[in-house]
Image (tube, rainbow, N blue to C red; front, side):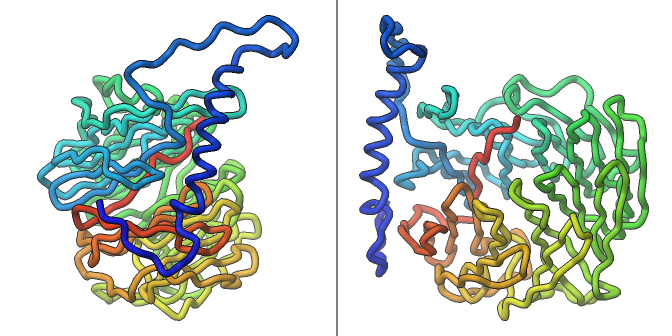
Length: 422
């Protein structure tokens, strides 16, 4: 791997490696102390030595390319595995901070990033092993959305209209003989697990979606709404509100009932959303040209699910469906085609920062084509630049690009393992 010089003085290897080394030392000390709650009492027996794995400071990232998946060490960004798969691939976190779901022609295949997370009270230990494609596949013709919520993972098959709801921590156990639920008509849909064991599921046919239904834990219908034409995407908020986009606004499942928030325009499509556990405001895209083959909007939507209002923010630049993210404090983040990461206060709609990351770019009309992609975890954002095969790292609190590396392949999708589902 080639390290690309960065004009910024605060590069990640210089800025963070001393802290990482200190963290590793602290980790050893903490591990030795785990199990003893009395500082004056007898020492607890040491934990068994792990001879086949190495303790590291965090989880891993994954990047798809034309023909496979690169698994990257999160700190060094060095590839630790190159897993070949000869087709267009999509990735989603399974919800256990270790596994990813790879959407292939057969269904959702489980990818093991190789990092085991061991919880010790108020902190975690991370042990790195080999990253592999497992033999476990959840059958799903035309695999669609994979959604984590309420400690569960829901996998939707567009061709079959089936939903499989699984425990993320048992993802390698394989699928049950029968799906959890099957829609009356197959469609490009989505399902969101709810806290009470129920499901928020889309309603539609091959011609399109019309709304959503909520099922209880026994999969009996609780409520339904047909007031969401061309329903697409999903997001959840700090309070557990579920949101889906429509061509004329958004549909909420909130306080045990459906609520519709209308767009300011007769056709105001919100098809991609990003929620945050720190906020009741959901970030969404916003399109107003129903006849466009590919609309390149410059406005985004901020949907306040508490006040049930939509605020539009004009960025002065377009973006893509892979441009939306949320910061550690709930900041709304949008990667613009001007090459800048736009940071928005979700409560006021004010753009507070514009961080230069990539060269200006233009979105392809073919959605499967590579394009700059934004990933946010903790206090860092990672941004791909396919044209140069580069991956940039942004430290959000300092609004600084702290590292840039060149990858061995042109990156397409970029994902992390995310937070653990509880």
